Length: 182
Image 1 (tube, rainbow, N blue to C red):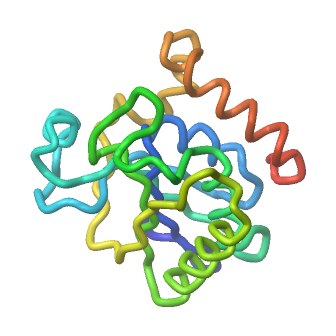
Image 2 (cartoon, rainbow, N blue to C red):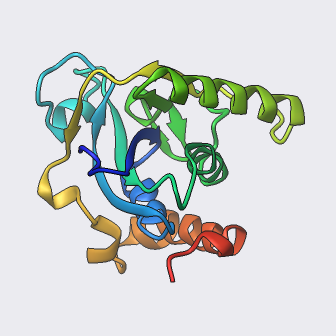
């Protein structure tokens, strides 16, 4: 995804990409969100390859946002509030390196902001453990197969959506009311 003039792009991994996509689609200032894969070695990986831990990729989202409406730091604050950044290679029952927490930075400014926020959050001791979120340069982002895109909005009745995604979206809506799209 490339942002159009006046937008920035962020690439984040925090467990299942369906969860992050569902949350960030509702964030004011976010202009687009795509589920996909980042951080691996295989060119054009498939979902099956990623799930088999054969590629090194994480399930990730890439979002375009208007920095005049929302900062990269605030994007990261939302990111940290909707997943557990202290569990290595897992989110809830989803286990494996494809579910790791990672910020794939696009430039040194994003890296600096991410590292500073992680230090602040660790010092604030919001969690019982230290944050294990990787802060690594983005090499390449591969959009997921079409059937993964906008999964929550297309399948709200699906059991995973009800049990896992809905509670995350509800938590986001309560905690970040001022950041909801109008």
